Image (cartoon, rainbow, N blue to C red; front, side):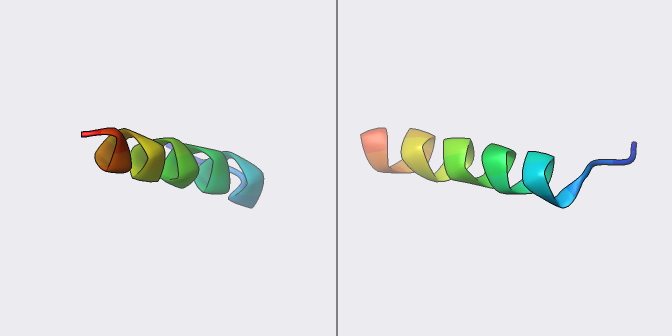
Length: 22
């Protein structure tokens, strides 16, 4: 599973928003 830095940043950002939403 190879992800570009941009994709990783995007995923991390979504995870953070998900976490803060709770």
